[in-house]
Length: 146
Image 1 (cartoon, one colour):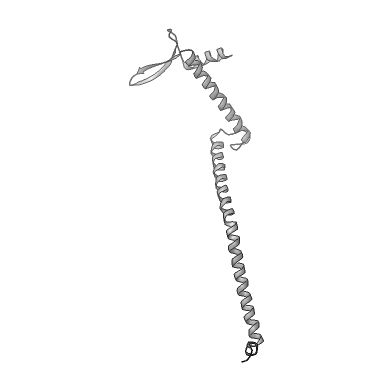
Image 2 (cartoon, rainbow, N blue to C red; image 1 turned 45 degrees about the vertical axis):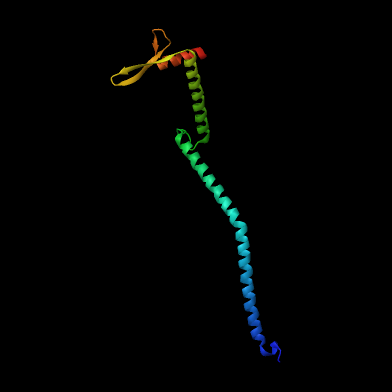
């Protein structure tokens, strides 16, 4: 029996080796890509989630900024103006809560009258004959607060 090398030419062996090497290269590349995909895919998915959260926060921030009156100098995206406006609103809210607590503490009652088919608030009373408007009552609150 003849040796395999004697039956096949050197050129055929070289061509077969090149094909085998190319197949191996593709297999190694495919395995590497599969491995890389298995490593990178969870990272990419996590980054996509983070990006979605960031987009949502940015959209929410723009909604808030756009709801605040524009800065005369810088327009509607002025953060210092927004912070100042929000702080002013919080101060007004605290004052309104203080006013409401003061009204309750002073035993003022809301006077409501039927006007036509509707009931309307006409003022505030503390049991005496004097009826104060909300503005008058608020001014009294500010005087006593000062």
